[in-house]
Image (cartoon, rainbow, N blue to C red; front, top):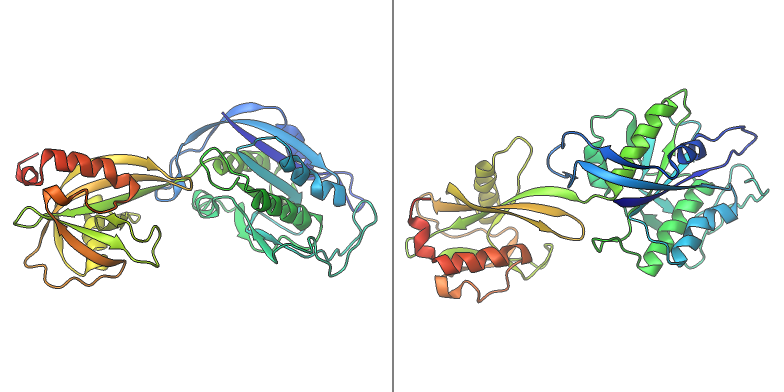
Length: 354
């Protein structure tokens, strides 16, 4: 079960209601399974069914309210994600805010009468705090939903202030979730019910909250290029790549509408400048990183003609490894167990029919 903190606000500027607070109150205390439906594919959530316990609070529209979640984070409370809601009268869709700025410039006084102008929220803070949520995954999941969009402007009122303080505290304290990534937190501006019904907004907030607890799932392929002398090609990641200096089999992400075999051909062409023929999938495995889950498929390949000179675009070095040399380089973590099995079985046995 995942525990999600949802916050909304009390009414302000003379309004009798604030839909953000009403959504929070509607969810408060419930434990339910949120079904996420069919995966959108690459960058979709790792699980399609998530059990969530909602803990909700309605914040005051003033400095104390903007600090409430930050103060909670200073204590021993543990959540899998934080979802903060705020009402935006001029918005027509739910807006996933990419971050908050270190600026308070209130158009109107807050509920305590405070109205800062061109002030810093935190004199020692960064100019911008980006959301810790898996935003790319969220946008992928809501790509076909016209009621949800991304926003890069959380305003300069208490909504932005609250978001900034929360993200700043997560950053400052190094708060992490169960996977070891920064605690996912995002601010969502919600529109009037006249634009998107209350029931529909509750449904969307449920989805956002459940998704915050998930990591994106990526489909990745790797090509095992076997030479005539039973050596395989390993490549070292370049300094400007993720996880530089580690060795891997060349490959990469499967694009939408692409088969694994097609992805192997394309990735090796892009990374090495050579053509290969995928023969069969040797093994499939799942590996979890703090920020994502990888479904990795290892494909046996043969060169199409002579390989010639390699043109490296993502690596700075390659080696042809014999069976005894397979463990002589520092492999990426997901590859290690597969490499050991490959070495135990013997590279020469790869030529035998599956």
